[in-house]
Length: 444
Image 1 (cartoon, one colour):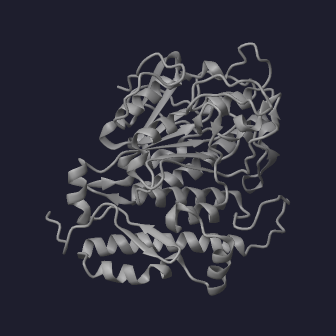
Image 2: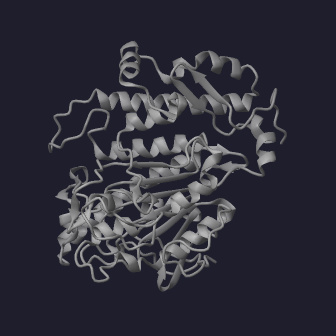
Image 3: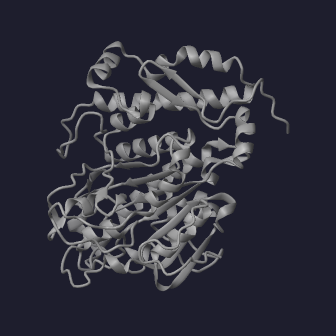
């Protein structure tokens, strides 16, 4: 099928206005630009859930393509062909190794670094460089943001958060250097304004207040440029652009609704304006922001923490009013194990929303999901016993780059960093090692 456009567009075409910058999604008119670059880009994203899982309800039955999705992974059944479950991976450096308690801090710190963090609650923190930042160093200059870090729980980086370990370890999985964590942005408004503000910076408070007072959308600020561009696009690209801009406006509306919500919720909890009162709405909004960023190729490397390690989030909407972390210390009590499993299922249901959104966005001859490898998992396997072996690991997407639609059982205690080396290879990022890696992982 031939593609009819009125002119070709540079890949980095941006709609600019006063205080606004809206990058465009992949359009047919950009094919010459992508042809010069080689192909549509591959992205790498990580979704982290805290406190481990109920492992027996996580691990698929069977290996290879003839596997059976587990109860926890069940919500992803519609995307079975795009899934790659990997069992047997471990983070040895998440273990105590003589440092005593602090497994939650070590789980978060080692998850993307494969490094044993220094036990300290002071300023002398020391970890490793995380795999997302290794990728960002290599490919980050091609996008507006080298990487993007988001989360759903406020994250301070100072103080003691776990048995003498700094809060920097529990609250950040992304590390720019051994001494510099990348704390996630947890406020949807701030994340939105970072994505669509001019000059890579959010609006100053006065400009933000003026926009709210005038009820002006970021799209209003680039309206003239949008009309000019649309005149030069073919019908297919006009439809794609309209769908994308509609999505951007819906993000704004979701944030505006959250800012106008009555904060007197039950059970009571403290969240600033702009964060939806319902946790599910909050997580879905942060996932939607990620889709928008990936769709516009604003970044090709992303991390998202559904909760910080040791999270106390409760889930009354699914009948689990208990705080998550204490609940995981169930000592095998069936009713408590069931509540933990329900939380695990709920997390995957929210993740399925993200996967579905990626699959629904067309890019080139496929979908955005085909051009994103998303790694979903936790730095602990069993939250009750604080184990760092046989970690819950799921890969989604990647198109022809990954042998999806299967369950791969790696040899017991294979370093998870071996998987990271393999994923970096797919991005064309050549490094000899990540943390404690011992080689590449075969996913065939």
